[in-house]
Image (cartoon, rainbow over the protein chains, first blue to last red):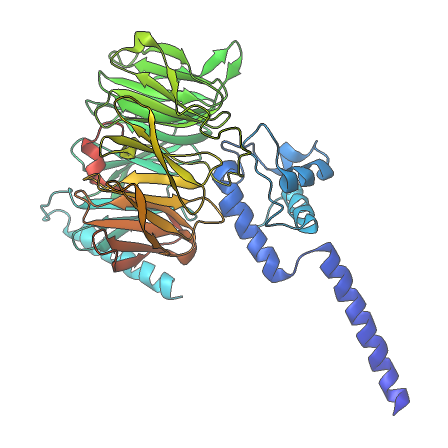
Length: 110
Length: 391
């Protein structure tokens, strides 16, 4: 019995560890969907739904290429005083802002 | 699935109507359109039947699209975010003409005589005038407020005398351009204040107001006496308190004046500011549920309907202008983006973007009268705008 159970236990541990690592790095698929909607629709009211800019600057890979990711994450979380960019920390965790920045820099999903 | 079926049926209906267009004779006074921002479509609607009658696609990026009407209220000019300017025929339910006029646009306006359509642009910053019949470019005014520095243009409004007033977000100025000679506009400049975010002209065409984002206050220019320059009203309405975050900029238009007062969104405060429309002194404030986006008077001026920025965008509140108090709080749907009154205001149409629906409310009983499907609906524009100054 015990010899048959052990491989299952090992497999289960690996599976849990694996999914935990994934959860740390990126939001769940359902949350990703919400974040994409938030960025396209609500960030989009200033940055444009296609992220080509409006009252706020464009958020396309080419326009963000020179900017350090940490600075962009800080802007999302804390806003930029003196500009129209508000802080989003009430609605986004830091790792979610990191995920958004990573996606913006490589081409944001539809 | 249910939506796509409804859209398919709409499409078929449009074809059918298109086929009958030759024999159909009707006015356009009860027609209008709903912007479907995510898919580049507009749905054409009839406010008497409370029905959609056609759907037109291929209009590009319609996030933040706005519409003005020809003076015969037959043609709609749709200004898209991507710089597309599309002229639609409401009767034949088709695109008449479409041009790409800039890289990034924010809206437009039509002249007092209906001959010129003017687009306001972020990139390149400035305004462009087009022949309303042909959409041929007539002239442009780059918003170069300092050598080599161009501003995003906001708050464009037609004003009497063949002029257009607008504000420069980056330049901090109000400009008034006279298009009496459409190919040679003449522009006057007025210092305004920090970061004007939108503007409006009062229904009589006399006063141009620009809301400021960078400071507490509204800038007022008396277009009958422009030599007096622009002056600030409702200054320091924030009383030095820290601003709440603004997750969406408010929008201003001439619907703000009702019952002898101007009803204006505060910036960074959950309040509607009220000023006397003769003395322009503050007469009160109305606490509301969130950061107001649209503060719109009903056509008779008895009610003010208010919607809100994210995250309070599921609410709509109604202020009674006689008592100056909120008398109704509604939850029409998810992400309420816009409202539009029927021409004489017995009903209001409300777009709920994340519910993919337009809701119709009775303005007297606040009962829902009906609803229509629309894909991520944003702006709703009825032809009654055709006859209004500043629309």
